[in-house]
Amino acid sequence: MPRQVTPHIYCWSEIHGEARHEAYPWNSFLIDVPNDDVVVLIDPLPVASDEAREIEQIRIPTHILLTCEFHLRESELLKQRWGCEIWANEVELDRYEVSIDGTFVHGGRLWDFIDPIYVPDVYFPETVLLVREFGGGLIIGDMLSGGRKDAGIADGDLGIYAPHFIADFEKARSSISQLLNYSYDFICFGHGSPIFDDPKAKLKRYVENDEIWENLARRKRDTPPPH
Image (tube, rainbow, N blue to C red; front, side, top):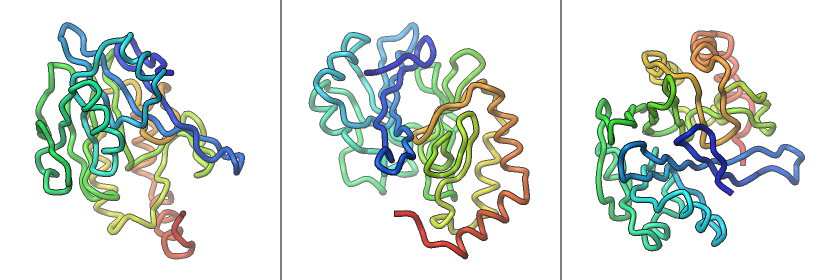
């Protein structure tokens, strides 16, 4: 069931890792854009019939925004159901094998409510979405995770789950650090629990801590990649 995160942001999740007693959520989001006839799905996970009806009770989705190619997920099926347009970052269009209906750009603004921020060089090219709710909030797809037991990341904290897939740690660190140039009061993640307590300070400590990045590089060298 979609749950309300803020007055205009909703989330629904799949729970992974229960068999290993390391349960954590995979998340997708709905943004009911204020003062506009726009309802946006972010990286939509599969939607059961009852969940679809619950979403429709909020409002019928009009758009799907993708943070990266790997989060296309059920977008085409949901487009068939609701007629919503699928949008992606224009610099990533050649990475998609499906029809993309519209594009957004880094530094632009969508419906006076969502700012796309292009972040390359972590796992793969991604777009972080800055939502102008309260003092601002980030929605991050893959590059950082929130609290998740399988990765040893505590609730209320953040981290990189799979350093094995990062080609260049200095580039990744520099790319993530650009998120410190924006104002926000919360961070929601495609994987893991959100942060509402001083998220920017936690991100700053993570990015600026040399020991963290040395440990990530050591994990890549010394342990096999996750399955």
